Amino acid sequence: MGLVEFLGQMGRDMQAFPFDDLSHIARYQARVKVNWKAFTDAFREGYHVAMVHGGSIPDSMNSPANPQGVPVSSRLYGSHYSMSTWANPEHKPTPSEALAWKMGMTFSPGEQLEMGGVNPSGDEIWWFDMNMVFPNFYAAMGPGWVFTYHFWPRSVDETDWIMNIYQMDAKDYGELIAQEHTKVLLRDLLYEDLSTLESTQRGMASGVLTELNISNSMELSVRQQQWVVQQWVNGDGDPGQV
Amino acid sequence: MSNLLPEPFREFESLAAIWSCGTERERHTVRLTSEFEQLQQLYDAVLPEIERIVAHLNQFPMGGLPTQEQNLLNLSFSCMEVALPVEAHGQSTVPGGFEPERFMVDF
Image (cartoon, rainbow over all chains, first blue to last red; front, side, top):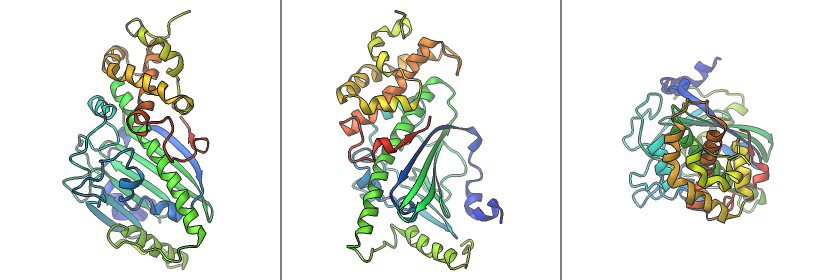
């Protein structure tokens, strides 16, 4: 099966995105002490943002109107998944963030460039799409930027993680400095994610909890992954496009 | 000793001596190993001047900065490097974050 066929509708929904107009601005790597499936679970939901990133981006994806950052839409594409996140219309940018948006763009809710290949459900209040390509590739796509994760399992409780960041080519030095804001903001958020994931792994490994509840609405894709992995492990293969 | 920065920005010479690093990895390392007060000094001095800096840099073509202007751009990048620590963290590292020595910055 070729990549286009494997991606199916998810690939078609992204096809109009102007990937060629983006520059590769950063790459980060770490070996993280967490199971690869638990790792990807963390990026199959948005509610962790209010807690894990509550200090660094306190009002981007959540507010009293949407305290848990409930996503605006989700799409199941067979083995793959896509979710569109809510952006708080009342978000208050920090001084550096406001400056980045004045000079160019950064990763935070701000001016929305009109472009194809994102927001496939046409949501009115939209920040970015979280796309999970089975089994181990993630691409967050927003209005003018993309960041990706590769997850490479090392052992049952260790994963090599690689992050790449891309943003619209800088046409002047202001846009170039704004790209730096994107990098640092995302990098610091990942410091928060990776330490939380290792805590999650330690918690699971302790064996104190024998079961975990999975939310139907907030963790739809966590359920999906459980099922899809079983399909593949049992030799039933790709469940096909839904 | 020759100046690091172009004439209109000489007020930032002492900051440039610390912060005008040529790669993201170096800027991040300086941030992680500096006292928070040093991050605050850079932020307070340079952030309000970024637009004046950009107006100066935009006189030159992209990718074609003389050495002093390149130092000025690198200083501006470092200002962004310290922005989130100053605006949110209140410390040089990420509170409760992953260990920096295990986090590889490739560029």
